[in-house]
Amino acid sequence: MTSAKASKAPDASRRSERSRRAIFDAALALVTEAGYAKTTVEGIAARAGVGKQTIYRWWPSKAAVLLDAYLDLAAQANDALGGAAHGEEGASGIPDTGDLAADLRYVLRATVDELGDPKYDGPTRALAAEGLVSAEFAAQMAEKLVEPQLTYYLRRLEAAREDGDIAPDTDLRIAAELLTAPIAQRWQYRTVPLTHAYADALVTHVLRGLAPRP
Image 1 (cartoon, rainbow, N blue to C red):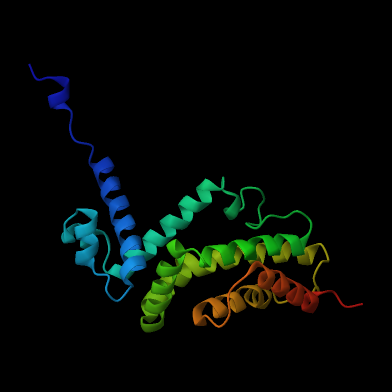
Image 2 (spheres, rainbow, N blue to C red):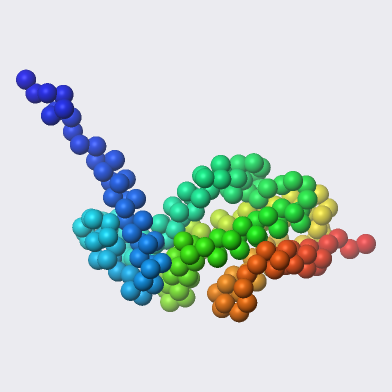
């Protein structure tokens, strides 16, 4: 008689999830330690303890691995915050306390902190670099990462426009880009340190320009 232990089939889905997690961790660690140019699929596979063919079965390139690893990292951070970063406290995706300036300062300060964290800085720079040389990858990154993040701003600004906190003719996309692009530029070119004070000043200047006219 075959024992229950012997007859139990291996859980392939659990094994695949362990491999996927190991690959994500390896990709993020390598790109942080060695940089994107020196990170290879072979290196990711070796560090994750999987075969190179396993990675290529799921992803076409190291850039695709890194993008999914980064999205997973962001999801884990959001889960640790109880979903607040993705708007489970409200439909907008950015906290809506009724004070637009305070809400925007909150999310931009969090962005500054994230970009200053080596855990995010290296992978983010790697994704940005690949997007500059590959239009196809840039489109994927825009669809999976950039546009969803921008949508959070659009929803909060739309609510603010409906409440009369910003001018009724405000172009919401331009307004969202005014809030996010300057931080991205300072981070990308390392012109000056990114600080909470800068995030606060940015909100002040942008909202001054978006204020309803008499």
